[in-house]
Image (cartoon, rainbow over all chains, first blue to last red; front, top):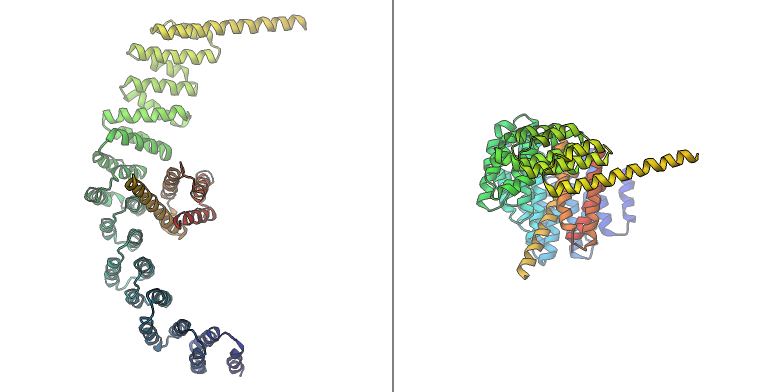
Length: 427
Length: 100
């Protein structure tokens, strides 16, 4: 029998720890194949443990054997784990924690969540304990997604485990994982309620975002957005975590303008924050900018438009021309309109720029806008048009500068012409 | 002054721990992040967080992490792909910052 020969050959392995584990691994395979030699293999494994000198090593070997017994579906596995756990309590804290960490890792591999949770109680280092509990929770959540039966019972276990995860950052991370699972199994109300447990600003923001996007994909965002916003605002007030600004961004980026503006109402220094929000929007979701401006009150829209125009002037692209057009038609502030003129000039839309500039009532601003246009014309060598324009510039300081520019430019051109004439005569 | 330093140190630590776990989530191949805008926004969030931390910092690992996340963001914006290898590099650099 080859298998018997193999079992006899294991003896050549010198390291007794490895030898014991090898017997156990063979034992598992035999047991699963219903080969009765498994008993012999496991017995040999136990016998070999006696050859190990180091007591901690003995415990670790026993744990591994217990694990392989578990994999072979042997009932004695659990008993062995208990026995080793009991023995481990006699060791100093650090060693003990190490052993329990191993036990828990084996339990998770055997998918024994309850057992793993039970052993986590014995871990004395708080940080390690929290870390292990997060692992246990994650495994439990994994099981939850696949299975539909006894979900209620399993959800209660989630609450039990999370109660024991008390340290940050583990707690926030664990809650974020729970929320993700709730979303996947369709427990949207629970997911939103769970957000209330988050006390970390970054996780709060990230999770609200994730929930919102997930609901949007399920076409449920309209139904739950209000509730989501309320929970988030509650927390931010209760724990003094200022995320309203972030919420306004999150909702806006998601295209939910109505709720974004609701969130905006709770912001303290609104003007400055609005500017930041609009800036993010135009960078990340330019298509939202126009409807957003339309939804804002006229004063807010004016401030927001200023930010938008500043951005457009620095990043002139034809893509955004409809936004500029909307602003030029709907925003009364002439300061903003001057910016629109500048944007049109950057795009080379002189006629449109001139049309808006001529409509400005404020003398100083009109001069400024006309000056910009004249400057543009000069740059493009349309001196005749520029001179016409300068006649309308009423600000004496500005018109002087422009006239000076024009005169110099005319001389430049004249000189160029004559030098070309000379060149021609010479050739 | 000491209190202030302590406070800012705590904030930095909090941010780095948050990002480390966020990266774990991104690496986990979760269908949560199949949404392009959410993915983009999450990476963008990390980019700005790291930029703020890296500015004025002399920590080589932190600067490395920022550099990598900037590349990651560029790829995502221009090539439409989340490069997991670069994301792992960001994680490794951040882990080194955290272990200090």
